[in-house]
Image 1 (cartoon, rainbow, N blue to C red):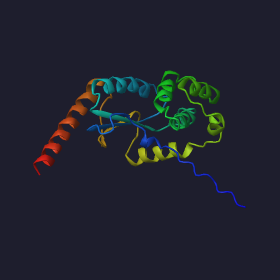
Image 2: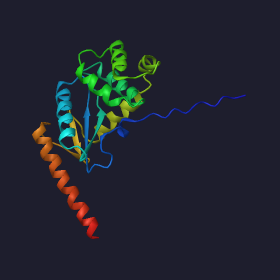
Image 3: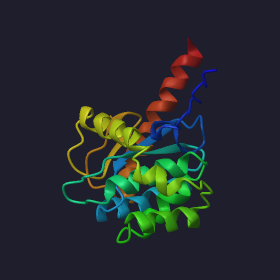
Image 4: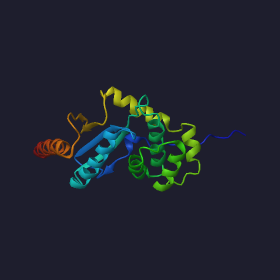
Length: 189
């Protein structure tokens, strides 16, 4: 008798958002967990989510710069692994708060703090189970022209400039205005 291999469905990073599902503006960031500028941008994103509650949704995509930060790849994989249990954002914030301690053993401890219950978390991490998802993000970032981090996109349009609260707010306001115009045109049609 043959055994049927169980299909495992992996929740991809591109499917994990925080914010209102049908928000008119989608903010996407390509970043990594060891990068100081990405950590600063994470705090700005938290403010934006509060300020624009219901109007924006946020998606974080992984772009580990492994030549500079050797632990960034495994940290990204750990975030994807936590996402499988609905704990992506908890892990995401813990990783930024602990960007100096991202070794494999530390990642296991961080996962417990995030509320991840997977007994095979460490095995999955060591075996690179979620490496493909991180690689897919990396490839997409490259195809979108990401060269330095953090890299933001607002409604799929590249954001240029320093990712400060003021700069990102101005860009989000512009995107909200465009969104309102499109809705008015649709309503008239």
